[in-house]
Length: 210
Image (cartoon, rainbow, N blue to C red):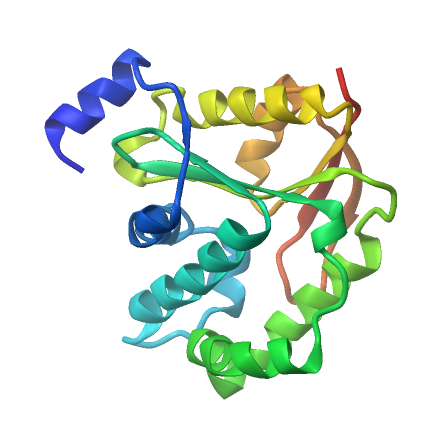
């Protein structure tokens, strides 16, 4: 990010806007940078020189899916993003869709860590709420833009839209440092999710509509 973009984020002068297809690369780069040291990503991502490129490729796939099925919010100059999905878009994927993502998943984990991602997905699916809600799939801020209130503004903007729908919201936090932030925005921990004994813990959090 440029110094001018960071200054704009620091001043809080940028209201989050809805991202479009033209923003896919930038959103993927921002989220990839934001999750570079995330405990769960660190656990299931491949551990070699290809990790950085594989993580960006994975986020490009995920952001592309989100742009088709949900809503992506970001500051106008970038640096952060949040992804919100309606619960009705979270049903089981078709066999064709699963086959399409295999190359991206294998590139992300390598064969050695593929079972880790599978365990994570299974645990998340097992505990995901079944009642109608909006799912906060990702929210992330690039390291150089953290501590400026950007994540909080993304949450405020997204939750205003969720509340307008009269729906609850759900997320899983894989970073214990973020749990207090989500609590300040009305989320409460409902359970701890640990995909395997050797994995990090995720905190499932739920927020009633306001």
